[in-house]
Length: 135
Image 1 (tube, rainbow, N blue to C red):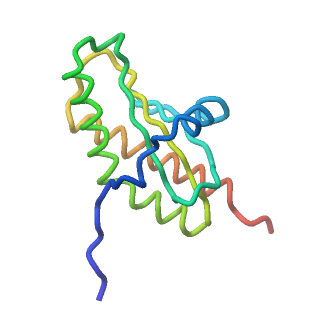
Image 2 (spheres, helix red, strand yellow; image 1 turned 180 degrees about the vertical axis):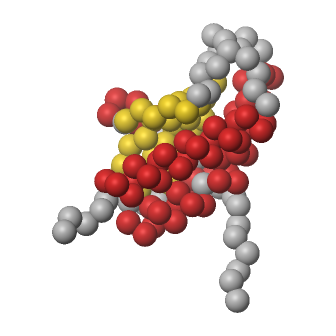
């Protein structure tokens, strides 16, 4: 009997280290699925997958709006990240990803959920292609 899948975003799953965030921005690879941009980097950290989230203060002056968008992004990521984690575990890869909201208007949850899903599928496809054994 298969156990129920857990959806969580714990403390160890968050990208918080300033040094690691700077490394992701300096050497990471960009990937965009409007209105979210992801910058990802393969790491050798003990955690399989770590993620950070950001919203521009230039486009959203009120912290309430920025926090709401980050909360929606985290929730849509939390519900869809399991497929990416399985792919990374299968290939023994550690990944750091930073998501940036790029639109100038407040999004709906459904729109963010769809964009995040497509972005995660792109990441899965890229990781799968990069770690195929050569015949």
